[in-house]
Length: 168
Image (tube, rainbow, N blue to C red):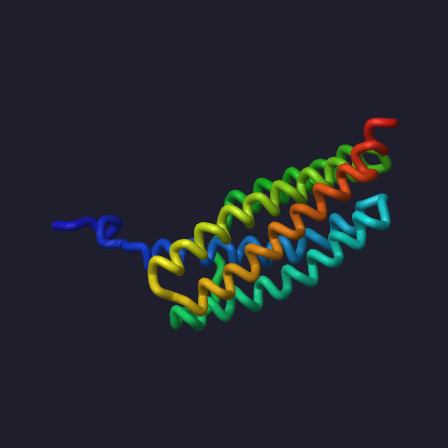
């Protein structure tokens, strides 16, 4: 007799991971304004605000993917994003007013981006394997934007933020 876990296939894993990312994106929507408020650099504030707008689009795309698989959009608590955002909150608390604050915020934001890039890449691959062409296209758009955001954060860190922290 097969166990319940043994009967779960890629469809279920895809759906579970989709719920994980839906929760993560909603949590990021709550976290980004706090990071923007805490940021000292105007450029970093603007980067966080821009990413918040993109994140709203990412949530909408995830809702479209749920529609593609004929499931209701729902989140499942994502321990990874909870931990990453808690680290960001600790940085805000511990480095408030410090020249290193923005460097810490950038590091926390990139941890989020790297998690998202990993998950969206996986979801896109699974969607392809499951023959969900429309989902592949939606997930690919988000993956491209996440990679662009990561590159922009890297450039921002290298151009000013890390140097300001180092000079202090």
